[in-house]
Length: 135
Image (cartoon, rainbow, N blue to C red; front, top):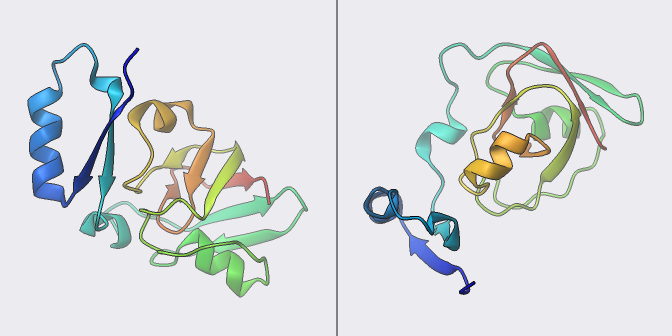
């Protein structure tokens, strides 16, 4: 198998390349790195709701609409490594023990999103009312 193709740039270019190559059999060989976050990732979306995040240490934190999981945890004194706060760097990638993820990052592949094992807590949210994170 050939090495993956690294494709980097801003959304219009990467969206074009993704659409152009979507029918190719070797689509998995492409890795896209976006220079900026998807504007929709950091903005509240219709249907957003408050939910509870529990850590494996037993700390429960309410995450209101308009507040990221990262910010809610930090406000409760739970330290989490972070950097971009836009879902493009992967520093805050966190393992999800339970709960349905609303992925809003620009980093994880479709396969990684479908697996539902990790999320970028700086932008992604919970689709349900509760989730448990490995923190």
